[in-house]
Length: 81
Image 1 (cartoon, rainbow, N blue to C red):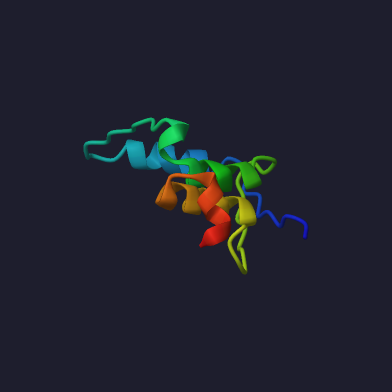
Image 2: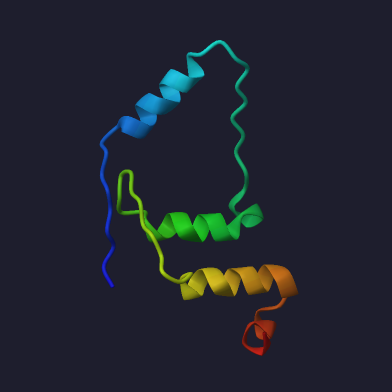
């Protein structure tokens, strides 16, 4: 199944700039990939899109695997769940 991407140019960057210009306190933090492997995997699935949207009917197998590894702590437990 191919990827369907809704490209929006620099709209996301412009939205972030607009939000940062508002009169409020903003903190942007970087989280190491090791701490959010599922989010990193989902981002990797759309890496070839500048700004994209992808709806999944079912979670990708790679994401299910990471969730099980996070839950059980061992890749060998994935097939036993």
